[in-house]
Amino acid sequence: MIQNEIDANYLEIGGRKIETENYYRLVDRATAEEILNDGREDGSCLVRPFKETDASIKYVVTVYAQNQFFHLFIRQINGKDFYGIGQQKTHEKRFSSPSEIIDFYSSNTLQCTNKNISVNLVLKPIIT
Image (tube, rainbow, N blue to C red):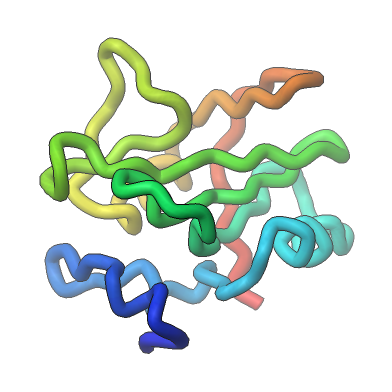
């Protein structure tokens, strides 16, 4: 469901829009952290829109672990063909949609790094 003009520019890949996923929230960084800080387990996450102007970044995955937050970009690679998560890496895994990223890392570990720590986590998208 399109919530505002910003959402109108997002892509539908393979018939599955990230905005329709239960873990997608139309919130800012501070609100995402509030939601995830409510007694959640390590790896709890949600996807939110990236509000800045950047042609390759449309979404951010906010992850909670060890009383810290990680904010990972979902980036478009090569225009609109593939997606990656976090900072660009030389041999990064590519995905066909933002939803595929969340699906993959819900059963595989993802290295999350902020200025304080680095941890390997399995994502646990929050549904409520």
